[in-house]
Length: 469
Image: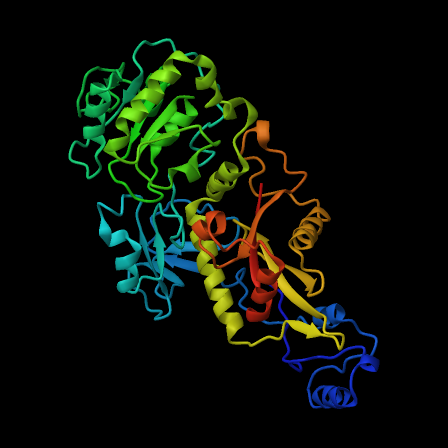
């Protein structure tokens, strides 16, 4: 679990006193002698001193687990103890289920479009004092995306596309806020043939699928829909809303079936593509003639078309792996991790621990705690201020975990084709309190020694997260 520096020692501990000034030695001796803690041995290193002073009493989550009230679940997906139920004194609660604990964190959750349901957006949630927002946005405290390795077999082989019709579409909400219906009309006017199986602009019935895109006879509607999509070179993955990170099954089913998605929706959809150049993004109606020309060209150039599906045989990019690996841990458990971490860090803040030790040479040893994304427990590491190049920083972390024969959290979740984790490639290291948009695509990921040093100096006992790919 968590181990932390327990006792409050001199803010500047000087070792190697032979190198210090008389004034510094005197102050150091006075600080140590006036402390209730053990005296520092002259030969003791900063790392040894920090390690020996690590008896820190914190809440035992085995005996007193995280409790969440009102979360809709009949199964606990979490690997550590976290309880769900109708608790009077909970650590967190759905906003509609008040609790007796005034410090209980409020939760607001949806997988719907925030454009259509602003109540679930960050702006209103913040204004109304919601502590934990769970939606499809990667900058929410606990993202609830549509994607996962369990839900989608992304490496499923593609089939040859022999249909003369270029694209398929399943759209049944004809009153959506996006421009998707107008885009379908314009694509048709520009010579793109479309089989529309949904209620909107309906032109064809699929086997076992009605005009609403619903299964009529099969027990597995998703399978019937997928079997239809896979026979077309393109699928119109047109979302009902245009907002960042609102990416639904329309898009992911296209990837599974090896059909190039033509996307209207998330402005940052390129963050979700399995390889560069593997999707077509329609940002506005003015692009339709250009998009239509590209689709026609690809229909007639099998070699260029297959390049867009190369990831099916070579494996997707590390960027895509890092994204989808987020959902290896169920959102329920990621909620537990977030609540537990919030409780733990708040508890630590009240203890005011000293987590660094400075030698007279000016070198500082930092005590830092790291965990893989999706894990709750942190591991202790030490870093010297004179050895914080980004290369050395990553190497030290990698070697620390390799020495344990550590297996990444996604082992067993990905397909065997790209599931080996023996090399422990680090994709990102960032403050554990960062949101996933900043961690994956923003500025939270450490990229320079100055950034690391500044964070360590400004955040004693820094808590970091790692994404292994």
